[in-house]
Length: 433
Ligand code: SF4
Ligand code: SF4
Image (tube, protein in one colour):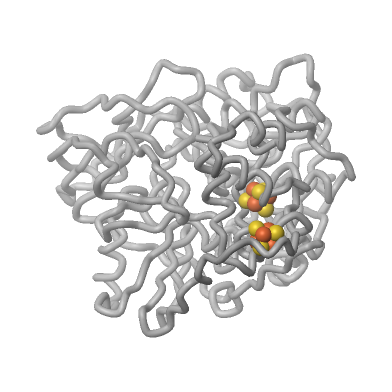
């Protein structure tokens, strides 16, 4: 059963990207990606410049962090107290927060070298991959896996397809859609960088057909580039990289395997845009587009500096904070509820969704399982959420594993359809930690 998650983005998708002012104080988390935590490279009292690397790790699976503003480091402290909890209140680790006060001088760090488009073919892949790593680029669609790792598959697995994931299936998010409309040429440049690195695979752009303006723009700019455009009615779950492959190619990525074993690499549109910025403009990942929406009257697509406290966005637009029930960062289905408006925008903040008390409907009250099997027929991975849940409730991890609990990618469709309000996704994801 394919569950339709109703999108709510008619207003949002029409709003052009607006540049949000630099924050007075930036809060940069040392762990914004999947992988090893960064160690701060700065100390309290240090002066920093825009784009200066301020955190790094010698571990392979890592992406460094950079200062989005010029100013002085005021504090370095544990981030977890001020930031997020998962929608399902999972324990999470965000490392440390490096707090920088803006001096307004807009001093720029120029460590990251840029090239012109005509130089691309003559630059080695190792240099390109090294610059993508140095720029701190990660999967900006939500997974947060460092991009330079995804661009370095083992040589035993030649890459046949580079899939540009422009499905953006979260309920409210339109940040990728606006990038496709407004930064199409830049995205094409990023595709060319990735195509070179991956050995000239076929490029496919997967985009939802209801993004009319974006589809037209992509057709216009990408025509003649030997790039296949797949504009289809992808479902919510097909925004996931492995389910997207099933939709495009008909195959399933085996459990525990990565996409490259099937000869496929999937990258999100915002990530590709960031790659173009790094290679051709020498810009590390210090800003991103986020959709600011929900119950507020005028939704926005904001180009905002990473590290901007979410509360400062409310202040800037004079939004009433008294009626706030909760604020979710990074998608209504798979995002995180922030526990304080001091929590910052991160590399993964695709959207900021505001829910007002006056509009808020309480979730279903938890009752006993009625054996309806809706969760089973709805799970896009054909898992048995109810059985995994029951195993985990008995702390029977072996049985949960046998039921492939570790394949769960947290789409939360099972919890969404359950008439008994059972926290299936929360329990399964907690069990996988
Ligand atoms: S959250 Fe996990 S178990 Fe539930 S529907 Fe999604 S993939 Fe299946
Ligand atoms: S959807 Fe809920 S009530 Fe139905 S079988 Fe699954 S857990 Fe039980």
